[in-house]
Image (tube, rainbow, N blue to C red; front, top):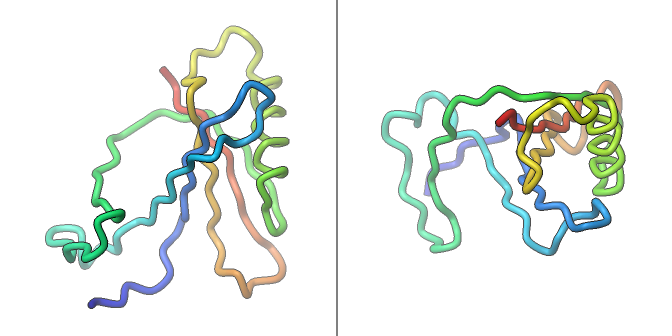
Length: 117
């Protein structure tokens, strides 16, 4: 019953298939605004969960435009290639982040994050 407005980033946890594409399952995460951090509103929908994201070290790449699944897959492949075989990061998932509202046409920011092991 409480409106929280746009949060940034909107983070999608992607679980890559063998070919690098997204599996059917994804998890969308929204940051709870600062004023609600200490006492977040209780979800009324059972599919909505409140989770605390622990601190992490990431490898990241940034790109612009309206990001689609193919863009995230492409930039994840580029980041993986740039890191080479020496970097230790989680292979079972990666995070796709968008920072802009849908109506912002220019200067959009998107990122792919690999979580360091």
